[in-house]
Image 1 (tube, helix red, strand yellow):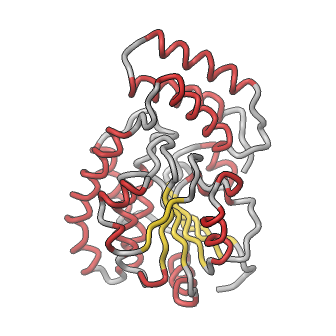
Image 2: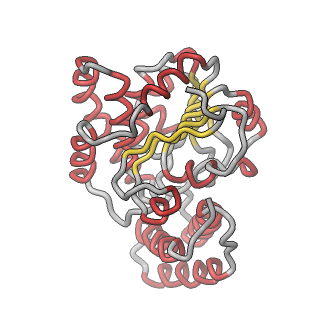
Length: 291
């Protein structure tokens, strides 16, 4: 997916948000904003939005001296999400279709995203999670995913954000764990999940968790480690969580099937893909019309 002009205000807002997470010093805020504006002015619109976001976030970390500006909110939402998961797990087990229910909740957890949102409250997460249990899903999409999981030998699950990763755990509990490797980010980027976040929600006790060696949102293969790229190329099925994974992988040619699971939070992505803001998306890519 390419970048659009409407992405530019989002980059600027993101940079000011991150700077304010780190310090109350208005002079630092101004310095960050001015540098980001110069950087954005030179951005290549044919690249996906995460290609610009990674440069902006690297600049913020350098100027503020903070390697992980979102660490506090990541910890907060890991705790809150785990509390919710413990409450929701019995409902998933009692559901007539536990996999579909777990898919719904995993997608809803994608609301915990400080990329497109300037502020997220616990109450926002609660509302989206509850709504997801009755919201519509694309016809037949979960059944397609179920069949893809059954025939896959190796499944690579691309995690997105901290907090959200607790709901990913709930979905993974309803998948064949012996097939699954979960990939998180190699270094801090916005509120994306790291190995420490996977450990915080107990995911490392269930499946193998690796990092992709990158500090870019989504999955920009040119920034990832050789080991991750090897696993990516050898996977039979890739489950890609979140908007940034759609942005970076929707135009990438791969041999595996990819299922994008995301909550549409941005009108640019909605327009690009023909969705609506607020949609719960299960979208398949690859291997032609295979059912």
